[in-house]
Length: 274
Image (cartoon, rainbow, N blue to C red; front, side, top):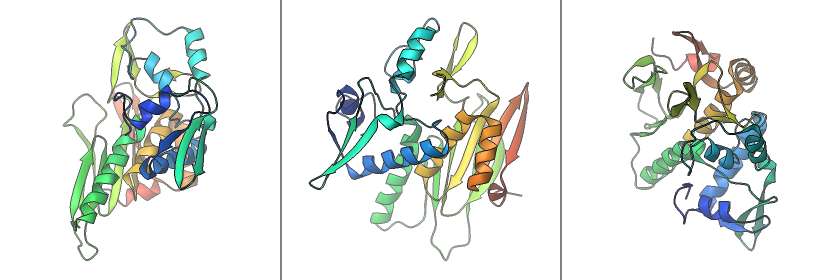
């Protein structure tokens, strides 16, 4: 459903459509679009699912990695093919449709996919009567326990390095979800420069600031997964300001030379393992 690689997925079908052509979407897809629109507004456009063409030219979509930097002209052209305001949801005869109002819009839901998959698996387990479980999909983790149980699960937040087993800090979760976005997770080198998979919609370029990891705790994995990417693209100062305004449970990790600096919101502190 969410894959931009599978030809028959809703995403791929929508991306092939021209402006004003209707793409029927299911309830889950509709829910994802609404969440993306919500967080897009709150992050001032930094979480943008319509940057599919920009992701492609930087080699993180369905095209090969470039051997040289995309030209300014090419970047500007693909920026013009983005903007969540160009997505329109239409309801008609108990069916829901998605359309674009300009040609060239391509959506990419990879930034929300792990969170959605985690919540969807949780829904399935709950439906068959399983009440205690931990689900991990990529950077998203969800823990569910019965209300009368006191124990929580200990979850590790990875140090933002290439060493996957390196632990930065520990938290405990009980009926919560956490999602982590990081510039260290998916990247390549181009002419000696590290290229991150996270694209800033306003510049059309991969983020290059010192905020390298964002972990968000929320009641749902989709919500946490939506916030972490948008906050990371914003950069430390703007992200911190928004986190305090929205009273979010977030851990920000910045890198200064070879040192990692950690900032934790008041709402996140209660989850720390002392």
